[in-house]
Length: 444
Image (cartoon, rainbow, N blue to C red):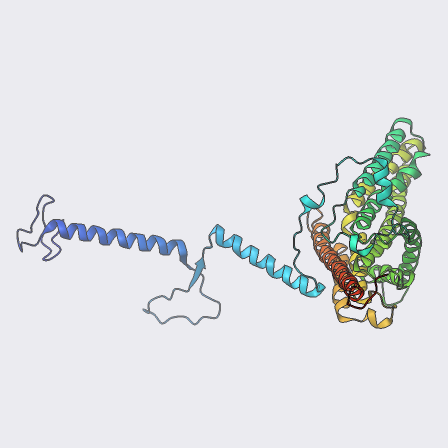
């Protein structure tokens, strides 16, 4: 130990310096505090920013002999886990704001998936199911003041899905046990139609005005599927397209939207929710027919023909083809709610937001608000089919989530549109009642 004042060497038990008389203990404590404080500052600084040496950049002139070497430094900043999470949330919020700006929607309010699908497993008798389904006619459409304007609670779609899946699994089991090829067409169509139809029923339930009948939906489903496929094939025949994967986003989305606009061009259906349902109907028909075609060509035939060419007997070759078809149906069934049904629902909902109760015109198709929203399903479809694919079906999951977020934003706008009409109807009714009850007016 050394004296802090004169530097003379002192033993630890000395309380005062023998040379200058300065107190040793106070100096030692002061020195220790200084060392601890310095260590704390250094430790904190090292945790916040580190200085690392990097190679001398190329092209730097050499230093003269004897000159001190130059050290190029860069700061490396460390971010805490809390700051990293906050940064991710800000990025996500920014992306969500940009998406809402493009789609002309607002943030979802009062939305909860758990609450929305909370009634899926609630027991209902057959009479309640029939009353729930048979709506949309002049006698079964509820008056506007009785329409629910909160977030719907759909449940019928799950029963439809369960019934179709059970029938599909039953036919598959029969084929596996018996090898009877009569089961194959039923397996193909049930597998192709099950999920698109169930998703269509979900959109039917989201149409809270209940002003579209099952008959209208069935007609649009069949006509829309055939017409949209025909328009898409004609679009692919144009010389400007070479049928590359990403061009399907332009051709098929335009084909499906034009089909919806042409078939449902009247003024009877004015709600945004109606347009969303019509788009989902055509999208479901397109998806089901397309999957059936893929199941036949890329599944059954491409699994069957190689086996026959290799000399495998017909029974085993058919079994190999059916297995390949089942794998394709399973994959496309899982992805179905994220694709065509939601894309066309978004596009048609954006168009009906412009159209409402007015006759269809060409000007509506070039409305900036509609075009920006329509670009979303086109881009999502192109990204879905892009040659670069994220692992674990990442393209399909990401594009599907983005599409559904915008769809729910349009559903919220549709619910607000119905609520605004309810308010106008109530004001009109009150004005009529007040006019009737004025002095000098005789009530009839």
